[in-house]
Amino acid sequence: MRLIQIAHALTLHDAASEFVQNLDGMFRRLGYDTEIFANRLDARIKNDHIRTMEHFDGTTEDIVIYHMTTGTSFNKWVANYPQRVVLYYHNITPAKFFFGNAWGSWLKCIQGRRQLKSIAKNTFYAWAASEYSCEELRALGLLEAKPLSIIVEPEKILKRPLVHDIYEKYHDGKLNLLIVGRGVPHKKQDEAIDIVRYYKEHIDAEVRLIVVGNMKPSFEKKLHRMVERYGMQEDVVFAGSVSDDELCTWYQVSDALLCLSEHEGFCVPLVEAMAFDKPVFAYAAAAVPETVGRAGIILQDKTPARAAQVIHDTLASQEALARLAAGRKNRLEDLSYETIFQQVKQDIAHIVELWEKRV
Image 1: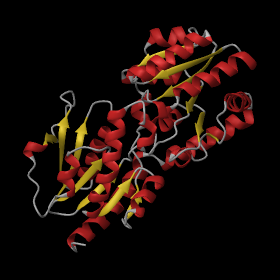
Image 2: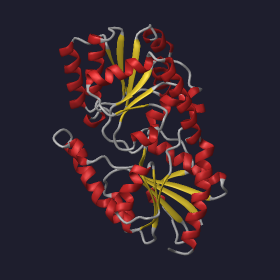
Image 3: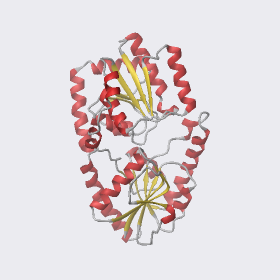
Image 4: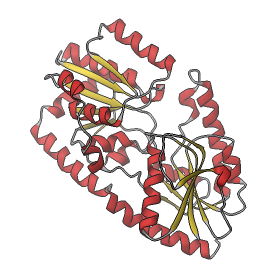
């Protein structure tokens, strides 16, 4: 028996793709034979354990674990696989967030939600990155659905070297608020600009927003137009897609992380910010409160005036900062590699037991 993980696509610098590889390492540590197959494989990934689907050689004895992230024609292969599978559901963004601004993504998300129903029928056990996502699976009849956190390894992140040009330029005494994520409408980088504008005009002019992440061109144009209209060219930095070293430097430079997204199945940047011991301010949407726990401030109201004031008051309070620091320490322990490994050990034993009974 092998534990075979399958993904539609594995790409470099992608949280889901890195999770697949980390999970494979845990399986091997537990003594299992493993394989990873990808329908589409980024040539930049150097991992001898990964092959493309044309080499797939699963048998009736192997347990197949499918990582679902979006709508794709490949999902039909999984739904029709002759053996029932284990599903890891990374969550699919609701299509409404792409309506009218990204029709291709809108269609993929609608397709994915439909295909999820078919895959669920061929699933005997499911993991998801959060309880929020598990509730969605249970609504489809998957009672054996359990949260399994994405693996973030702070010790690897913190070892990254500084990019000194970035650090020296932006570590200049201004309050640096960082937002990390794809540049798409539901991530709400536009709202972050509005918050920083209010902060600058009503609280303290020495503030800067740093926007990290690859942008959809139409949304990027909208953000740049906002910045120009507000006259904030010196107050907003668009870093774009960055290397690991650059990302870690931006975390080092920042004073706090903002997450205003209206949909997240987990949200890795929240945990990365915790690893860098940075305060987190995150909007209470989807799985975000669950991921943050007591390690950050959950914003119920993200109107510019309210959010800016909460950020200022929190960062000005030593008591609040100490409470958040203690929360980060506890949350990072909950999400540590060893903690997750112990859960994987128990869950896999249960999965194997179910498989041998052919439930």
